[in-house]
Image (cartoon, rainbow, N blue to C red; front, side, top):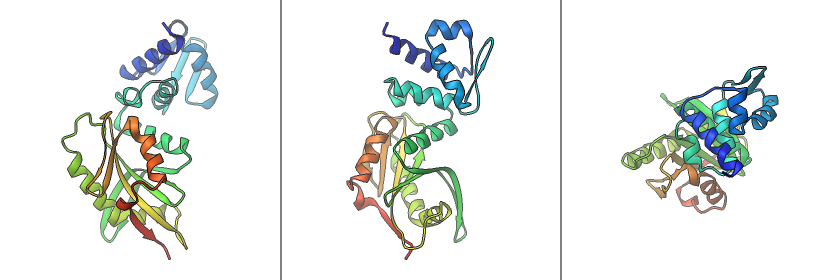
Length: 219
């Protein structure tokens, strides 16, 4: 078997069974040992004499590694917890060069809400609502509700992130799911499967969805 495919399989299996410990022998047998040893310097993996232990955030790191080696993002994130799925989306924003914040709570005009992940770059803010769904059923109602939240509370979110003064920012509601083939725009909102998340960000930056944007002006 191709070495990378063997490592991808070991990574996905570790995520599936919620594994946070790799003994030396099992790490060597799966081909993960050099990878884990090289990553221990990042602080998310602790190397001990008898093996390797993942620290907080380690499962998200395994997902990132699996994707970097060629696994579909939907497969790499399927067994992550909801909060870890948000962390994965946040990491993708950062890889793309966005100023990103996760789980940001705001109160404005008597309304309170928490936004899963927000990424801002070049005058465009993407408000990502992360849903670990594998079925399309509730998407339309979630999209409509999320678009309303962004319209009503997006300004407060951007202020909390430090934006203001003479800036003008376009806000884009985006619902991110595990449904691989999903990619559509409607209800003033964009929906995309995690496999297409990166390409949707590119399309947003290229102005393809500007008609859906809420314009937040601080002037």
